[in-house]
Amino acid sequence: MIGSSARPHVAICCCLRDVANGAAHAVRERYVEALVEGAGAMPLLVPAVPGMVDAKMLFERVDGLVLTGSPSNVDPVHYGGGAALDPHLADAARDGTTLPLIRAAVAMGVPVFGICRGIQEVNVALGGSLHQRLHELDGHFDHRSNKTVPSAERFRDAHDIRLRAGGLLQRIVGGAERARINSLHAQGIDRLADPLVIEAQADDGTIEAVSLRNPGGFLLAIQWHPEYNVRENPLNLSIYRAFGEACRAFAAKRASTAIGCV
Image (cartoon, rainbow, N blue to C red):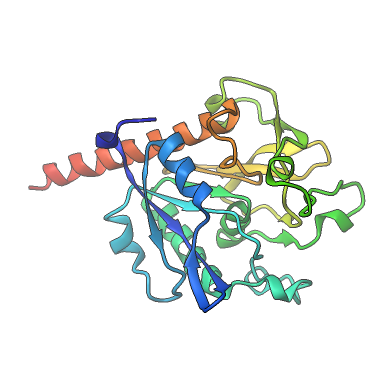
């Protein structure tokens, strides 16, 4: 783990979830632990309160943005996708918070890391669309997991991906052409947003990772869940370390700019 003195502050967007005594703004513990252990970051939770998060003020105080996975789906209203096929899985508060933050982060060059729902949010925020049920498409295998089995089995590696030659992800992981990942999603990218480029795909063509085509800052969004076994998995640990380094570089650049303006 990286020393605390070097820890950048990273914003994590919360989900709005129903709990026993009412709604709660929540982030699963594994996402927090993985950022601390893998990226050497200090996570700061951002509540799902649409219209109330000042993006400029937030990104003047944090060094990165993380978009976690979630049981919920991005509402198709945000990408012209018609009616939601699973309306009970909506989280309008998260949609209304994350989508504007993604656009602001990209505009300001703030490092962004998206996981599962996060890659879908990045694509939608920047103008792309989603398949609501990948498993119903011809030629695609079922990317969902069995929710009745223990977590260790649900989050184990499930299929291979092909990495784009010379891409950001391939550079991060040391030049590998293929990798093996877990798979716990029903939805996936349909139309890729114009500012994005594919970093990895499954053998059935499903987009598994994206970055910015013309990067003004670090952005990597992936469809799998790296937070579960970040310490033991070299692929996932490399990704977290790269994000942490990008956040530290962003913080250092901002600090030097501030000093120069004194």
